[in-house]
Amino acid sequence: MDGFFTVPIDMSSPPCAVSTDRSKRALLTVFQPRLPTADRLLPYLRSIDASHWYTNRGPLLARFERALADHFAVTPDRVVGVANATAGLSASLLAGGSEDAGRNGRPLCILPSWTHEATAVAVLRAGLTPWFHEVAEDDWRLSPEMVADSLRGNPTLGARVSHVMVTAPFGAVVEAEPWRAFSDRFGLPVTIDAASGFDRLRGGPVDAVVSLHATKVLGIGEGGVVIARDAAQAARIRDLVQLGLSDERVIRQAGMNAKLSEYGAAIGLAALEIWSERRATLERLHARYAARLKGETGLSLWAPEGVSSTLMVRLPSRVAVETGQRLVAQGIATRRWWHAGCHRQPAFAAFPRQPLPITEALADSVLGLPFHEGLADADVDAAADTLRAVLPG
Ligand SMILES: Cc1ncc(COP(=O)(O)O)c(C=O)c1O
Image (cartoon, rainbow, N blue to C red; front, side):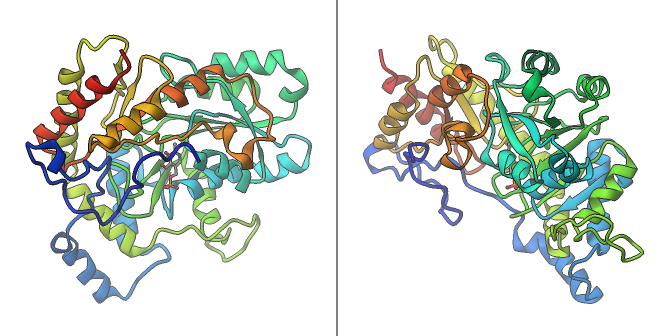
């Protein structure tokens, strides 16, 4: 597939070795996951040893959810730790009645095509069919106005829509309040896929889901968190990610097994201890890229509201693939994090979609550069300078 033109992420890769002689420098990896060290985990692991509570809503998960609630500025009863964000997104849709809607002639979920494939997979696993929509060129997001126009302009498909899933791209924020107003007006539940939005997301009046995957700023390996629109919705989601079992051990709606284990919660608690330090490093590296790339004609650096684990640049034309190849030949790995756009994936090609010229232009012109805490300032300078040098004249 053309999205992968450079080395895949190697979760076990050593730190980048920097040499002033570029020909001798090891490949500058595009991403290097950093999870808490074994030393930092040890106290939490010892508490698991002592409690013999390994999963199924244990004390560390409760503690982690309380800490996340503080971070997201909501009450703990709105926070549900889950096995991964994809499952959390599906659970949010299921809690909004996706399966009944699917069975009753409203199987469509509107979502952007400019998102990670996980968003579309989550829609399908919740019993819905994706209807891919175009994003705005300037902020890479769907807006309530764009979706309202689409519903009005396509009454036949519009009548079959039951849900909307909006993605907050690469550390960006999607304001929840306008989506609540949209949701009230059209009677459609909205879920925000804020997979990479940990830093700036604050709980709002629609469900939001954050990923805690190793590639995210607060990585625990595999994990996610749902910040539900209210406590009742959170309670439904909490049941749905333990098969659908309620506290009374009754299943009224079948869910899935997507619980976050005590080990996952332990890593999360340890990751929160080092979060502010990590955030500062990523912010500093982003600022260094911005300064180094400033003034390059036609090139724009994605500058989201919050820190992200990716550094995205929009190239002056649709040359992401060629530029990536030129950079890797110079020892700089890159990645098209969202590949070619969801609608171009064979598994999703048959689903309805709007014309998607902006999505296709973004997919062909947006590139992720090396970005992680293992980078020295000299690495950032090398990546930025090499990019400038290989851009087509
Ligand atoms: C936009 C988006 N949604 C969903 C996901 C899936 O997250 P997870 O791996 O936690 O299921 C990702 C992961 O990268 C993502 O970028």
